Image (tube, rainbow, N blue to C red):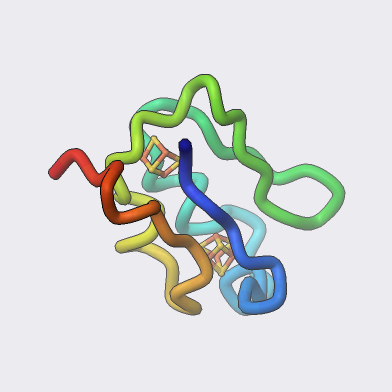
Length: 68
Ligand code: SF4
Ligand code: SF4
């Protein structure tokens, strides 16, 4: 598994260019593409730094995968 992004909740941090989840990810697993955050699952280590950084609570890690 990997981080799950809920696009219904994501507001792109209210329209920022440098989104918080992308900046928070230590593994460069997130990038902005076509105006929304996109995850490269193979790079994601389920650390939930993106989920903690998201102001919209739009990212969740399946609980059994959380590594902190
Ligand atoms: S859970 Fe961690 S590794 Fe995965 S996308 Fe979020 S910040 Fe990056
Ligand atoms: S931090 Fe949350 S609101 Fe901001 S771009 Fe990422 S998922 Fe969307």
